[in-house]
Length: 172
Length: 151
Image 1 (tube, one colour):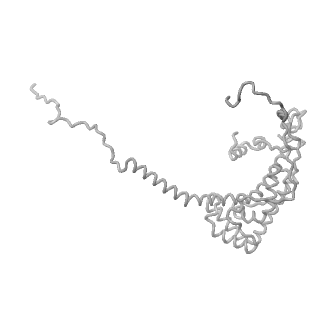
Image 2: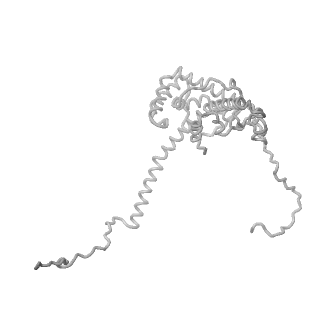
Image 3: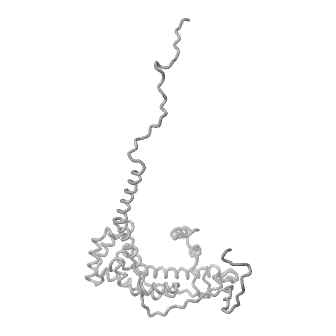
């Protein structure tokens, strides 16, 4: 095992939260609205994950993401359960890769329900493929520079230059 | 014995000539016309593909990627927690398993850690084979195949 006793690994209790237990068609069906509803939390988590490159340091952000998603699905269950199930079923059964194309009608019904009840509009096409700038309160993590023992010492600026002994190097 | 002997001879007028001349199929197009037709056909199909089929493919691809990216943080958070939980469980398991071996330190071999230049609290994830060392071998193979890792 790579981990020695000095490596702090969070305990089981710290890592156990209520997970989102939704199948792939359900996640796909709700993905755009969920991404829009939890956008800030999601971006915060992804930024943290990208900056730290360490799953231990972003646990709280991750928990916030899961809580937001869970809350969102609960809202759907309360308000748009029928439309959501219909859309997810359509995605599941119409194609092999959960394509949205064969399900535009059920998607429109679901979108309308979401807009009427939860006031969440479907983001425009390609919204989640765009580059986003996220402003955060979290301090930037310090990146420690790796020091190599066998790095050559830098040449001083005032080193006297001597003429080349064996001719130009450019020809060799 | 006065049997008439009839010798086998060529038919009157001789045998047919042997056909050895080439008999090629009728050629409808040759040279420049064939090339021109090829270029025209290819050009038309390419034009049609890039103006009527490929945009649809791109559209589909972008939509799929967007849906994936929208759900990615949630899946990643869940994955991170499960991963850390498993790492912790494996370290505890090793401690229990190697309790009877004298001089055994968890995560070390003869008192030497794997990464000696890194800080002690640095998180470096285990290899796949190590991650699956207490799991059935078949599960490891499946995962390796999924991740396209050479075993």
